[in-house]
Image (tube, rainbow, N blue to C red; front, side, top):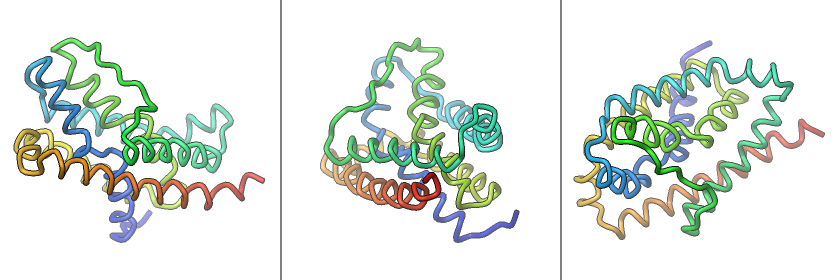
Length: 193
């Protein structure tokens, strides 16, 4: 394992696009209006724990279930593709669960599944095919710093970007995710046949 800034940068950008914390600001604001305050630090720490846990134990879990990491990467590329379609075309393919109490709103649905959801976990396992664990772990930590900052400044960011800016940002990250999904699929599908 060797720290590689290029790998950290690439993994950071992929995870940043998948987590899409900026694109989630409208959802976070809606949840905040319904339930009151969101604890940014608590949500960030729980999401960090979930993602690091999946980084270090996810491949063993897959091995236990008899799933090849390349097959998981292909499946992950399909999920990332679906997330990109949601972002680009403004459709809802994944159903959100908003039935949470005020006390747990920072954990469910903010930390999980908005931040550390199926797309994030799939991406983490998929990244292990190409990058060292230490570089992915650093990229996750850096993303959680960004997530914490965005959660703390949610209203201010929304006010600065406006609805048009938020929509443009969501589309841009959707296109980036779409390209990542295609590359991930192409890189891993041949190994399965």
